[in-house]
Structures are given as C-alpha cells and as structure tokens.
Image 1 (cartoon, rainbow, N blue to C red):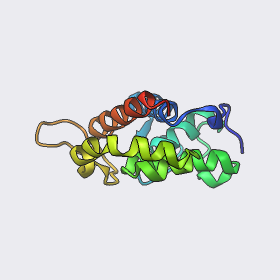
Image 2 (cartoon, rainbow, N blue to C red):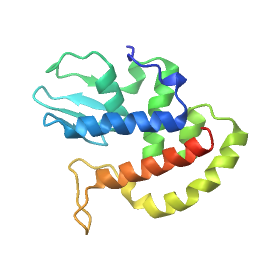
Image 3 (cartoon, rainbow, N blue to C red):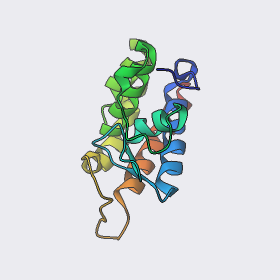
Image 4 (tube, one colour):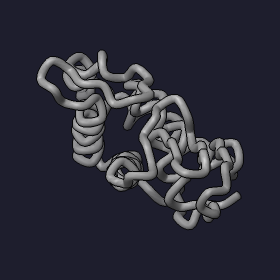
Length: 161
C-alpha cells in the first residue's frame, strides 16, 4: 500500500502539522469521526480514524463505503515509522516519536528539555477516547490534543526539526 504523499521528506514538526490538518478535515466531516483507538476503520456509512489514521485515510485511495480497515503495517517501513511517530507524539512520548523520525541523538538532547512544560500541562489529555468528551469548560478533548500538538510542532520547528 502507498500514500500519495512522501512522509519521509517531512520534518517531525511538518509531520505533526500535516496530521493536525488532516485530522481537522476528518473531524469537520459529518461521515468521519476521530477515534484515537482505531487507525482507520470504514464502517460503510461512516469512518473512524485516529490522528495518524487521518493521513492514511486522506492519502490512500480507499473506495468510499468499502468497510475496510487500515493499519500502518500496510505501508513501507519508513511510512510505518512516521505514522507510529505521530501516534507517539499524540501520546506525549516526544522522544520516542523523534527517534522514529530518525532524529539524531544530539538534536534529541537539544529539543527534549524544551518539551517539559507543554508535557506537564497536557499529560492528562492523552487517553484514548471514542466519543469527544468535554472538560469542565465544555471544550472537547480534541482541542486540547490539537493545542498540545500545535505547541510541540512550534517548538520542534524552532529547533529546525
């Protein structure tokens, strides 16, 4: 299986931004649903995808209503590693995600300490969820995860990662 975009050419910050863009498009569709415990699963009348699955869903030719599931293992090793990296970033395992993107250990040492504050602020929002859940302010978990991911992408971009 092949994506119509080469994830290997993207820096980790660009990879995160792509995942967020695709997830926001998926989330805006009445027939698609973000669900962090499924990569891509087409139920026929609607499809559930996770953050990395949004890239798979939007950039793999799958006939609508095919009732088909996609896993990252369906792709080449580099694409697999990049999709797994997105999932690691979403879980808050930034160092693991950077390693999956083949970031050198020197760059890892420089970037990871800058992640401590965003990680401390956002750790509670990395639980898998099926339906969007509201916090005490009525905001959706998606917004918290997206905000955290935007912040991480900005920090990585500042480090040229």
